[in-house]
Length: 95
Image (tube, rainbow, N blue to C red; front, top):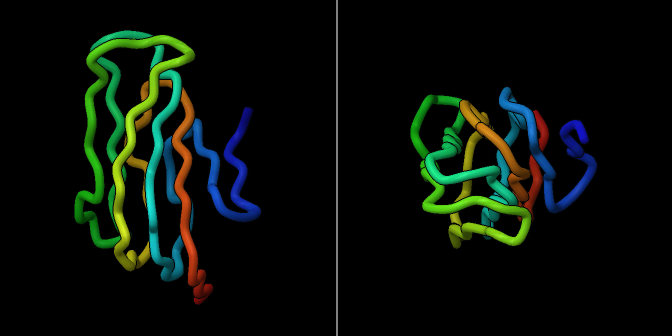
């Protein structure tokens, strides 16, 4: 799979700049890290850490959730070792 950015949720499996506008993130869910010790790092466009997590175990049924409810200026997935990140959002504003 490659990143799917056409609506909520964004589905991300490749690191990079995901969105440059403003949006309200409700929740992030990281599904299926391969094994223990895998990492994910999500930042805003200014480099502020929004979510950083290291997996405690891995497998297709494993998921980690972070409730958010916050407005973000841009989304950058700086690292995703494995699995898929789902970003649920509303109030999308494109610059």
